[in-house]
Image (cartoon, rainbow, N blue to C red; front, side):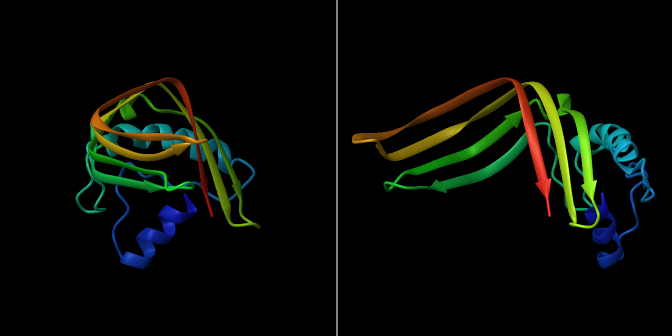
Length: 146
């Protein structure tokens, strides 16, 4: 939330009506949790002024992951469904450390797209391409911000 406040003041963008401020107090976490739940339905449709894309579904043209053992995964034309069902569980702000941790959950998150994969798992080669369809059930999301 502090980050959002800095974003608006740095870019001189008026705060949207659905981003409700919280005062820095002992009840900040409770206020931020309530206000995050309120803002989610508005954010799902995107906000051109803030350059936030529609998240129903969230469309990502390319995810390119590279890891150890020459592991390489590309997800092309990825679409994420279910973000409208996200429920914030907790907010924990530490103003002295400048951190914000948000936990949320979603009953089902579905990821569709095309994939290309190449690498090794232990000593076994892994190569392939095709359609991707991943459904995560009762998924818990942890969002640390610093």
